[in-house]
Image (cartoon, rainbow, N blue to C red; front, side, top):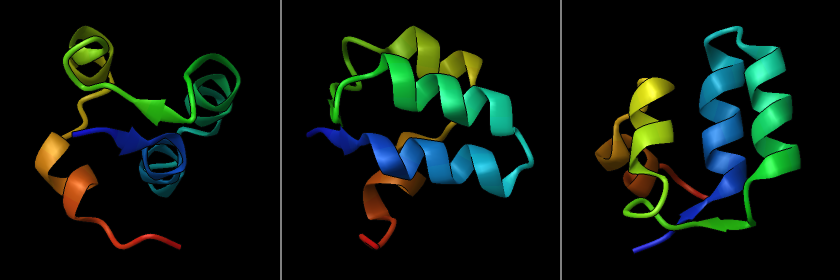
Length: 57
């Protein structure tokens, strides 16, 4: 399973973390592999289940 980068950025923006969302958009690939980026997602306190189930824009 991969997660669209825009879902991660959107989740961060909803929390008011604009700078982190901007960094994610610059640095991560369009499709994020949760296994490869597990540490980063944990640091950002993002729940993979919420991101995977979020509707696409």
